[in-house]
Image (cartoon, rainbow over all chains, first blue to last red; front, side, top):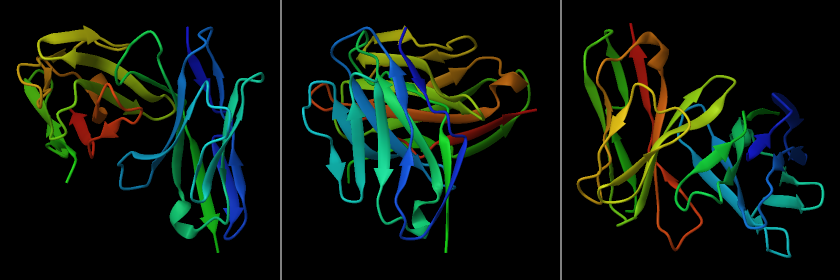
Amino acid sequence: AQKITQTQPGMFVQEKEAVTLDCTYDTSDQSYGLFWYKQPSSGEMIFLIYQGSYDEQNATEGRYSLNFQKARKSANLVISASQLGDSAMYFCAMRDPNQAGTALIFGKGTTLSVSS
Amino acid sequence: EAQVTQNPRYLITVTGKKLTVTCSQNMNHEYMSWYRQDPGLGLRQIYYSMNVEVTDKGDVPEGYKVSRKEKRNFPLILESPSPNQTSLYFCASQSHRSTEAFFGQGTRLTVV
C-alpha cells in the first residue's frame, strides 16, 4: 500500500534562510506523482509543486524546489529565502496510481514557523 | 475564475441531524473527491467520483454518502452525524489531463 511519511512535526527557521521539509514515500508502482501543498492558518490548501516519477529533473517553482531522490524514495521540499508568509503547515502527498483521479495520499504534515 | 466552492464554510450541528455539504466546480473536471482532515492524521479520502453517476469509497467512507448527478456538483451527505465526524472537510476536483488537484476552501464541521 502507498504511504507518505513526514517525520518533522514542526520546523523553525529565520527569515531569509533556506529550509528543507522531509518527505519519504512508499510504493511498489513505477508511475506515480508527488505533490506538496501549503495550508496557512486560514485553512485553504494551496498547491505548491509537482514531481512525476519519470521526470528526470527536480521540479522548481519560484522559491520552491523538490529534491527528488527516487532510489531513496524521498521528495523533500526546499524553500529558499524563507519569508514570514511561509509560516504554515505543509503536506506532502502522492497520487494513488491505482486510482485515476483526485485520490491523493497525504502525510501528516509539518508545521513551519518563520521568525524575523 | 477557476474555483471549487464549498458551502457552508462553518457548521455546528447536533448528533443525528442530517446535513449536506455542497461542492461545486466550474472547470468541467471529471474527477472530484472529498477528504477529511484531523489533527495528526493529515487528510484522508472519504469518497471520490470519476464522472457523473460514478462514485466509489475512499479510505474512510463510514457515515457518509455522496452523489454525482451533475458534473459540476459533488455533495457530501451525513445522514446521522456523530461527534467523531467533527472535522475539517475538503472537496477537490481535477481534470484527467492535469496533475494538479484544486481544493475548495474547506468546511469546518462540529457535531455536538
